[in-house]
Image 1 (tube, one colour):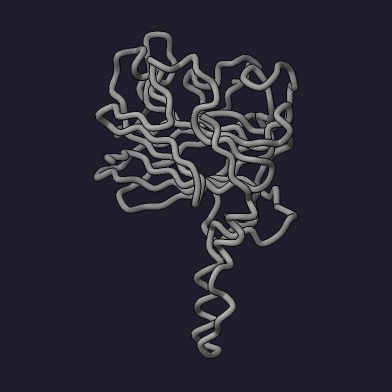
Image 2: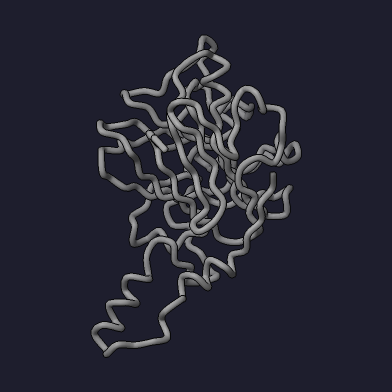
Length: 250
């Protein structure tokens, strides 16, 4: 299933209610609350903190080798909540975890130029404590994934691949005419017969992809539907704001 939404709708929702002032101070406070991490403040987005863009450019769509940053992994960075609106592609990371969880992001293409990014590599790693919120920005034409686990490292299968629930993303895809996409996937964990962690990814105000810890799948990937394309969120060209919940219980 491919669900398409427009950035215009997001902007319209963000601006809703700003036309009725209740006095200067109240109106000022109302606007301040609206200018949060989901806001689209300009058509000119910053690339501050990213490395140079490094794109192999081979393949198409699922086999495309896009931007991995130079140095490798510098296309995925943690940013502050106040800086998040300045970037074109941003994910907010929260959790229903009751203990610290490790979160690891990787590029689809590894440092060796092959599809090995999920074999123990990390573009960005952080600890998400209970009640904490993080923000991650992605450079254009970035494809990759991330996992979260209640331990110091993500679990791996016998081949060294991350064998946990994945969040997968493709931001501003060059071969896909700058469309973006995302999904949650339990394929690796289920194929390795290992624990499935709950995860929820949503476009702000739009489509979601969800897997619960007990394996309930909604618009997401499992071992049973791993050969079906188009599952998850498919977003038209433009800025993207994703809400991610790790340790999702439903």
